[in-house]
Structure formats: C-alpha cells, structure tokens
Amino acid sequence: MAPASEAPPGSVNINSLSVPQLRALQTRLSSELEHLTSSHAKLRAAQSKFRDCVRSINEGVVGSQKRGTDGKDDILVPLTSSLYVKGSLADREKVLVDVGTGFYVEKTTQKAVEFYEDKVKSLETNLKELENIVQTKSSQQRLFEEALRQKLLTEGAPPSAAATAGGG
Image 1: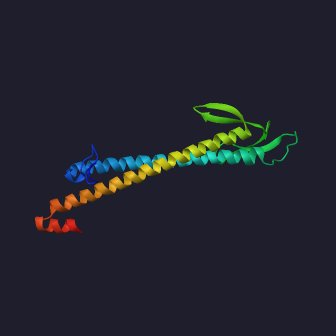
Image 2: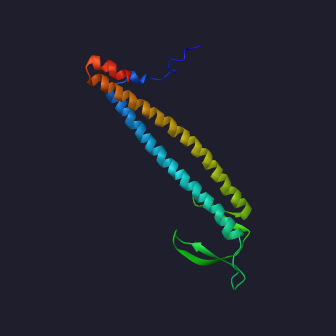
Image 3: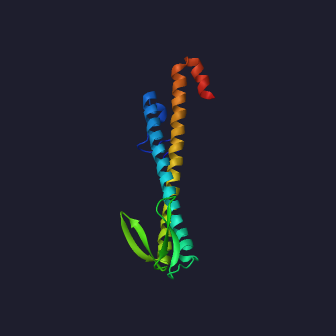
C-alpha cells in the first residue's frame, strides 16, 4: 500500500508549478466556478418554477374557485408575470403539462402534480451534486491561491526572508 503522502496517479504537485502555470490554473478555476454558480442559480430558478406549477394546480385548479355565470370556474390567466386576464376552466380534472421542447401532454391534475414534484426532487439531487462540485473547486482554488502566494513570497524575497515567510 502506498504511503498517504504520495499523490494519486496523474496528479501534479502544485508547489512544482511555475507562477504563470499557477495563475493560469487559478484563472481557469475562477471561470469554472463562475459557470457552476450560474448553473446553480438557473437550476434553483427552474426548481422554483416547478414548485409554482404544483402550487398553481393545487390552489388555482383544484382549490375553490368562484363559479362564473355560465357555470364554469373563473380564474385569472397570466399572460406575463404582471398581466392577467379573466378565464374559465373548461375541465378541472385535466391540465396541459409542458414536458419540454415545445411538447405538451394532457394529464390529470394528480399526475401533473406528481410530474412536477418529481422534477423538483430531481433538481434537488442535481443541486446537491453541483454544490459538492462547487465546494471542491473552491477548495482547489484556495490551494492554488496559497501556492501562488507562497511562490511570489519566495521568489520576490531574499533567501533568508523566504524561509521565515514560508513558516508563517
């Protein structure tokens, strides 16, 4: 068995890298972290939309509504995030569900809620995995920053000062 101090195969000792190499890796990690953080925000937004779908079905379609004069159920239909028009439900038992890429499937309200709840759970799993990746990348970035700082201190300082700077 290999001692714990040995690096895994294919890895590189960051202390053996030059300052330009460390800066390049640091820049790459910063870019990756920015992309991952953006992806995390987009997944959270999608998860929130799916939760809104469940709430809308439970409160708007299944919940109590006023009966219109024609015997149908009156609701407000959003045209944009801040513009609504009056509408009426032709059928409380079925809804059209956007399943992606412009396809809609008619489902019962119960099946639609299950569909969206599954989406929320799936995104939660993806978000946890993404959070773990972000934590790992952040730790790696801190290691590169520390190695770069140490390199700059040792290269820019006289040999006697470098020894004391590395110990603190």
